[in-house]
Length: 287
Length: 335
Image (tube, rainbow over all chains, first blue to last red; front, side):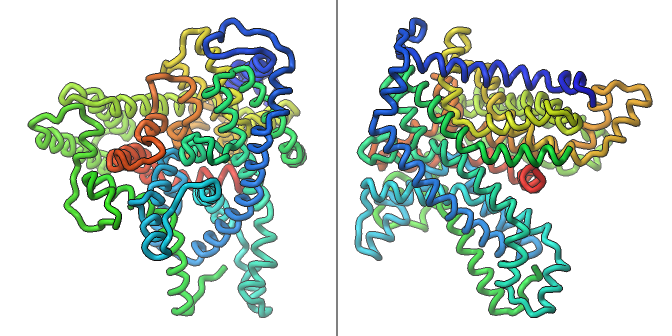
């Protein structure tokens, strides 16, 4: 295909990208330099870098950043290990029951995240299953405190993120060369050794892919934190995005909200550079 | 790996699978039970598993007032839906082509959704449901049309511009929604499109499009170039070859990607919340039923809303489950 045909075919998509992605980002940078609220949205006041300085000196911003990074550090490995084990188990099953298992395992991913979180939280209500279990069996009432709330967020994020990783691992397991595994069996390799020396190396790219996708997704975690905490500040459980939402929509500082958004875009871009470089090399080789 | 043969090992294998399956699905079954209870049963301190189910919460959620002949109407609706399902199942045996049958089913569904408020006095939850249908179907149509053209170009063009475009799409996919949402809010206010379906469809299609392109491209890469080249030798333009030759071959891949886009659009919370004040989708409307910090106030109603919001998407996904899994893994495993 010639460059001209390429540009013609991709023109509608490029038009959307320029008008609805690049232009808004430019707008966000401009808004970040102004004092705007929802009432004064049409008459911004230029304040220079004030919003950026205020954000970077706001302890709440850094607390949100630390909490988001903690979620990433804990949940990324946790959900990848769980999903990998689930995929190994599922790979052992054949026939119709496999489809049933897979369908049930995918539910947390398909149900609207907001609804999934409501459902998850109901379990911990005084009338919920886990609330009842803790009270009757463990002998403790479940109370929402900063610690329990943060634990819930970690649990729920793992719960909702593992199905996607599972699908990818499961698809990857179908491409493992059976002859290789059989040959290793003849040489006396145990199942654990096969997993360690054949399967994990074969799926290395998928481990990397899952890690990258989940780092990007957890960096913009919003829906479940929003519903679990109901934006109540006593839990100190703001992620970067809920902090951003609070500044823009609740405190009504649209300019500062945009500054926070621009800062988080910069952070994500910096974190993305190794991945983009990896993709770039791969794309160049493909051609 | 070869399946384990040892019977005791297999027992533990299935046991382990059931444990993970139940942890992922029990919360939903619990909420489903809650939605069928009265308020007293739902807030009972010891969980109740055996009770006489009631549909009151659902009628309270969907209807403003309950008409006297509700049973007749519900029965009629179920009968019509069953007829449509039968038509869909036996489409192959009918003397008309598949496209005609599908078109008929789509028209019938639209007519049903349009006609329901004429017969019963529906509550706002029904409006939210209709908004969700309009917005997610709109997003699928716009982003699939635009993205498949671009993905095709990306799969065929070998120059540097292609690499730049695909990297740009990946970078955009990973940006937080809010960095677009606040400027969109301003653009919506300036153009007067705030709180319209049009703005929601356009912006949601724009933010989901990069990922759509990425998945579709991996499908297009599988199709050998010779196919459209031979069509072009026969005198078709490249666009003609694309529409008449490539798209029919690609149809399963397009369905998978469309389904994935549908799920993303249906799930969206933040953008809709910021860009609409009344034309909400179900994801945003859900937060109305959350109550304050103590939630016991309307627990069964909340559960009914959760079930009603989740089920339409679950049905669609269950019908196309194989394609969705294929689409998810195709974008990932190959890319």
